[in-house]
Image 1 (cartoon, rainbow, N blue to C red):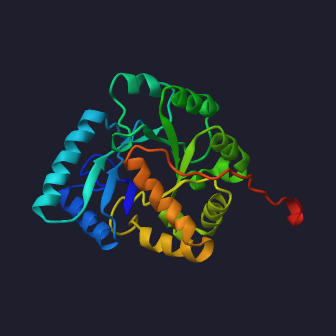
Image 2 (image 1 turned 180 degrees about the vertical axis):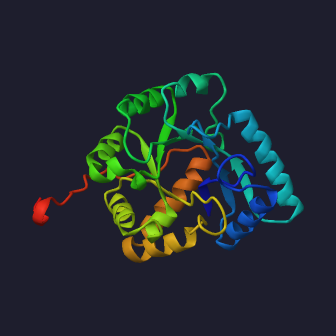
Length: 254
């Protein structure tokens, strides 16, 4: 299994604070059957700045430590980019790290809204030869209220990644319900941990795939696990035609 979203690099953001915590996270990941992890430290979110060369160096250090400790997990480089207008300029100047050297990049929206320039920037990113993946859309308040916004972004070529803990209900029932609606409507393409530690923000991947298997069937589990493999290989991922999510209005009437 591959986890494409994880804050496992030590001392760079609100994830693992030191190498000991990094190794503890890797051990937990191995117990869940995760063999590869894309390290995706926060970038440009107002508090953390982790550019490409710094990430590559940290990943090298972590893999050396994992080998020394004989932990059967490989860490690959990535980045969780908070959406900002100069993204493409920074990519061209070498500050942006794609996911595992592929043409896929993470884009994180603010938790409360969708910036007005989002659609244009995601289009420009695609015109620049990259495929944007919107991370944890199920935790964005405006998308939950107006899911048609996400439908249009996905229809125009953006991908999305839902958090395993959201699928399992660890962020609450509303977020869990929206996560399931995104899966059902083919509005998401990856399930990943977004793990920050071994306790409050753990991996939950095994739990999530077990739930998806029981609710949506093994084919859906295959799609998500295979897409993570395809991403790491730099290939085109599988995706079904997206559908609109119908939101119930007052008194349950549509």
